[in-house]
Image (cartoon, rainbow, N blue to C red; front, side):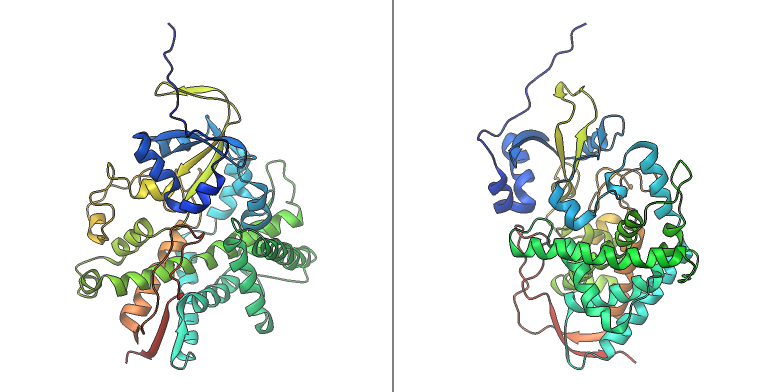
Length: 417
């Protein structure tokens, strides 16, 4: 029997890269709405691209029999955000084997150890902040200090500012143009050389990090053939622990912003009527983090009457799926209590990607993110009081990452006795 196919809605024109940059997080949601379709075709950077959104489309996107990550991320992202030959670029058994290297660190007691380090660093930073702090900048240094100790990575006091700035550039420069992108590539080279030197010292037994740290586990990890990973690949993967943890500074910023912008939700949280995890999940759903994630079609297949051709680049709409009115009631309203009776789905709530966290491509550090954000609530709701002076707290849906213009200044910071 012949299978009926239908054309994918198509955005006409030679290329829409500038429109993507102009509209940012809303580029895919805007077209899903205008086409009244959860998929459409466009052209970006001269290439034919299919954009998907919604829960059913996300489930399709994370089907490893239909999509691969190899060659999906643009080179400019590999040279800045991800690094080359890291876990994000692998598929099949190679990806599963490498992913388990990360998941071996994500057990509850080890995550608790990280949150204790984060707590200690917040106290150090806020107690020393005199009267005022720029939250985004302070959060990055707090998280960099904590994650380096957690990961077994030696960080000299004289290096803190430089290495923190390198991690920041990795996630801020991926989509940037001009000098900022150049600085991001330089930061990637510098950071990898820094960590690669440590890996070589570990393997010569001249540097002895604790077991159950990333530097130790990754330095001695063996691939499916039983070989140690090349030192430069280990460096990429250790940075895949450091860089995403420092990037949680974005969520830290939005967590404290939500406490400020939504006083009723804050009061419910303070009274114990809202669980901290509900609040954290709503911050992750409501505010922009990643706009899309990418894969390529593994081989020709048909889905819902649409044909997907081998090699086609496909983008999944993360922000739009988290604001999809068919999945979320009043999606543009901040409402942590929506998570009270929420039935968890790996495909409808995808702020850091979807799929299975243990074996699929969902972010290995998702539980770390949630733990750090819960600690943020404890610090800024319970342990410290502060004032928010007049400033521009608006954020753009065009900038990647999206941040409040002022980076959120706090003053009159005092510890609650």
